[in-house]
Amino acid sequence: MEITLTGITTTGTPHLGNYVGAILPAIEASRRTDVRSFYFLADYHALVKCQDPALVHRSRLEVAATWLALGLDVENVIFYAQTDIPEILELTWMLTCVTAKGLMNRAHAYKAAVAENMADPDKDPDKGVTMGLFCYPILMAADILMFKASKIPVGKDQVQHLEMARDIAARFNYLYGEHFVLPEAVVDERAAVLVGLDGRKMSKSYGNTIPLFEPEKALRKLIMRIKTNSLPPEAPKDPDTCTLFQIYQAFATVEETAALRERYAQGIAWGEMKQLLFEYLNARLSEPRQRYLELLQTPDYIEQILKRGAARAREYSAPFLQELRRAVGIWPLGQG
Image (tube, rainbow, N blue to C red; front, side, top):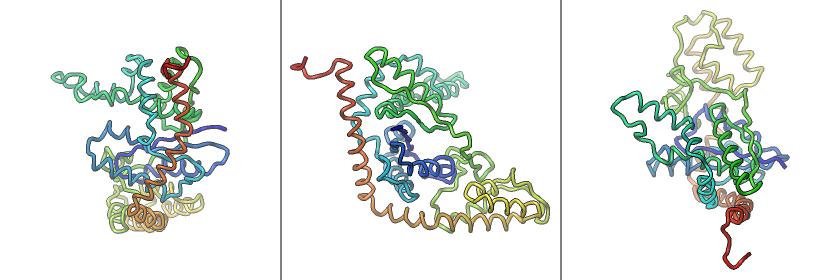
């Protein structure tokens, strides 16, 4: 059976862009019965970017609740927290010992941090660079290689991580025998990228997001802030350059989108369009929002789901790590 794996970063509150670009396609894929799918909260990875314990803890709860509220099938997939799989860190060290430093030097995140520092002649090139940032591609490789995942859904900006995981796995296999599957990146060219409040890509780093489960009044307020042009109400408008239309299209059916496109051609007031978008999104999200709020009040229930998922995941990781220990020469002294 084909194995796929999806990591879910636990930094910040999920927003509409996360839902359209990653969460919805992954939840639809979780219903497939011909694939063994692993979904995990990447909470060790969160420590690379965030040193606020309360935020890390809260984000773990919010992200898990979001996926459950939106219908992740936890009976069909294996849903767990990275931090509940102790074998991951042990594998990370094994992989670290066969990974060339030069490979890590080429990681995009590290290179970007160094380039930003070098723009200031008074800064050390490695200022602010932690070993977590430098080595996190190895942790990511461990996440993937532990479960022998062959297909990894990624965005275009994450392909390098898969290439590095393949390089690390190939080096380990060369030294110790064939143990790891070399994973392949699966890039969805159709994945939607939503525009945010200010016209740029919707991103937490830009501060222009619309949280997925924002309360009704706050949701309307944010939608009313979306940037538009100064065309008069009666003027025909181009839907393909409009943030409001793009967000609507990401949620609507083909027929609904076509009907709205016609209204743009005839002329629609921006205030009217913003109200229409608010009402549409609010109707679509009200039920999962209620479920999400209920889940936030039952963290022990979410923890139980994650623990059950971790137990299932360790049915794979625990014996595989024993195999890898023997491969590198670590086994009980009394055994030959």
